[in-house]
Image 1 (cartoon, helix red, strand yellow):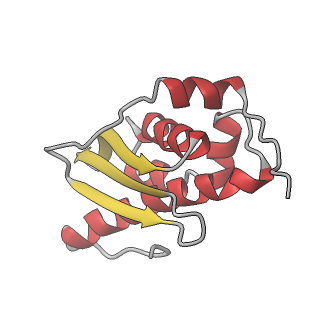
Image 2 (cartoon, rainbow, N blue to C red; image 1 turned 90 degrees about the vertical axis):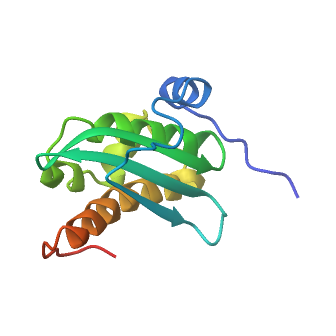
Length: 135
């Protein structure tokens, strides 16, 4: 059985070769782990939150170029945003930001977007805030 040829955008390749904000964050306000049980890809997203805004973000991931690139892009996109702006980032926003993904790799953007939403929801719960639409 022949395997499908996967073609990535220059942005995916750049973020795969030079991921931004990769690694654990020792002083994170919150972290959240998401995994795709079918592919085995996973993301642990770390956020440092100051005054209802994402001050810094980092990630650890397992998976290939699309997982690494979307996680890297997610950290760039959330940094400096308010929590509401960060949670408004969709999987489609991530796909567009990395210059598109092959259909078989879209799930990578889904788990990255879920990590953002759920990390913020977890932080809000820990702060005693009510949240909607997460987990």
